Amino acid sequence: MKEVITPLSSGLKKKRKEIDRVDRRLLNLLNERIRLVSEAIAIKQATGEKIRIPQREGEILERLKLRNKGPLKEEELERIFRAIIGLCRRHLPFPPPLEQKDNH
Image (cartoon, rainbow, N blue to C red):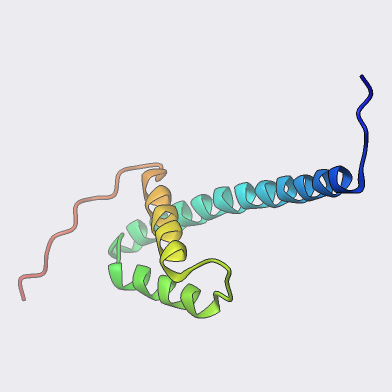
């Protein structure tokens, strides 16, 4: 049976191709972020800086919330980026050392 192409089905096909293109870009950007975080961690270890700074993570989230124009809701944005930050940590090429609490 021959497929009947209607404006709706060709429009849907076009949108799906656009979605696939965005998905590829997201995948590339996530992999790039993981690589950059790994490089930043290596620099931090070489210079003796703390590996994880929760304040920095908070600043990242706040900056993104300010830039968000929707339709992504603020709580969805935060959930997604917390997952991305955690994902980057889990893909480190080496386990970060345990950080000592400052007793001062």
